Image 1 (tube, rainbow, N blue to C red):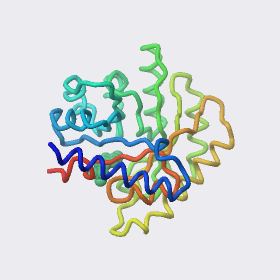
Image 2 (image 1 turned 135 degrees about the vertical axis):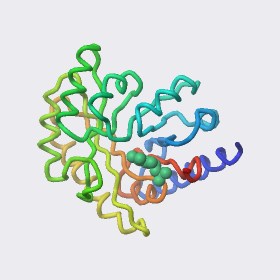
Image 3 (image 1 turned 90 degrees about the vertical axis):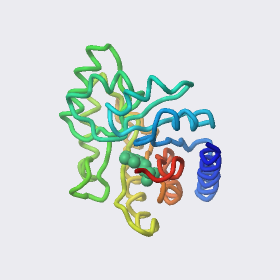
Image 4 (image 1 turned 180 degrees about the horizontal axis):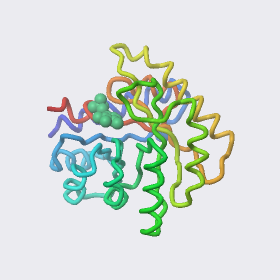
Length: 229
Ligand SMILES: *Cc1c(COP(=O)(O)O)cnc(C)c1O
C-alpha cells in the first residue's frame, strides 16, 4: 500500500505549506484520517505510516475497526450521534466532534456521569445554515456553549464544522473565516469549563483554505485513502 505513504506525505506537505502561509507551525495542525468505508487493514497501513488520529462517522462501523487496529491511536467521532448510541460512543471514542443538540449533550452527561468520566466534545456549527446538515446555528453558538458548559461531565474543547460544498474552495473561505471569528470570540470570553483549543474544519478538497483561515484540525478521507465506493 505504497500509495498511502505517498498520499500521507503529500497531505502533510500541503498542511505544512498552508500553515506557513498563515504564519503558524505545521506541528500545531492536527491531521485526522477519516476512515469511513475503509477496512481495518487499510486503516492499519495508514497508522503504520504515521497516522495517530482517526475519524469515523458511525458508531457501529467504528466498533468493528477499533479492536482490529493496533497502535497508539485515538479515534474521534465526526458523524451525527443518535442518543441510543451514546453509551457505546463514549467507550470507543476519545472525542465527540459532532455535538449538535442540547438533548444529545444531556444524554452524554447522563452516560458520562454513570461511567464517572468527563467526555471531550467539539460543538458542531452549521456555518452555512444548510437544511441538509446538522449543527448549531452560528448565531446560537455562544448561548449553546454556555448551556453545555453547565454540564459537569462534558468538556468543550473547541468547534467543528462541515462547510458547504463548493467546486472552488475559495468560495468557502468566508465560511471558515466566520467560524474562526466565533472561535476567537468564545476564546476571549474564557467561559468556565470551556477550553477553546481545537478548530476542526477542512476536508480533502478545502483543507488548505481552512488552515489559512485558522483551522488547527483537519479531517481528510479521500486525500489519504482515495475515493470511497
Ligand atoms: C467524510 C468526512 C470527512 C472527510 O471527507 P473527504 O472529503 O473524503 O476528505 C470529513 N469530515 C466529515 C464529518 C466527514 O463525514
